[in-house]
Image (tube, rainbow, N blue to C red):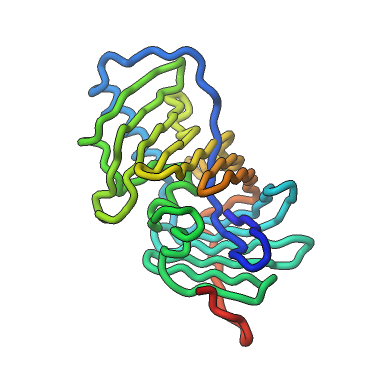
Length: 261
């Protein structure tokens, strides 16, 4: 979730989490209603129950490897630090309604709302969407029941294709054309692909492996392909994953830093 961008721009920071396997021949599921209820129930029940989460990260981007740390208070805040050779280059703190970003390389910072992500990705995102991507979840706020969808099955892999999904809590949120790939045996989302309707922006997240903690599973190897004016490829490896630890989320802007406008 941290991407380093050229001098004079953001040091972008988005740590998302994902991966997947390619599908072979598919067959259409006949009893879509029954499968839908079962799968959506499974996805909901496998939502990890925890107060806090933290992990170390290895981030590959642009031919370089960076190290990082992520700390999360579930449904409240996400804190990310990333750098190289033991030096912190950037720090990100997001809450339900605010975004704080500090680029130590350029001595600049951002303090505001989710317009930060819109300027980077080209579309609006919410806290729930970011947290869902990190945890390998579907988007809770997006409607499933009234959306037009199709099911295709290949072995243990079920593909759920939504023609259009809307955020029930925010009329200004982007409408998505989405494909979810779900491993019914492992009860994991293994791929989350969506396009923003009315634009060329897209995000394709592969969850290649998960790590078990106290009966729940957390993404541990993620491949991300994003397009927002240009293509970006990121690989994230999470290690030393823990839940329900106590930690701080320090964020203070040093004197002399300029505001990113």
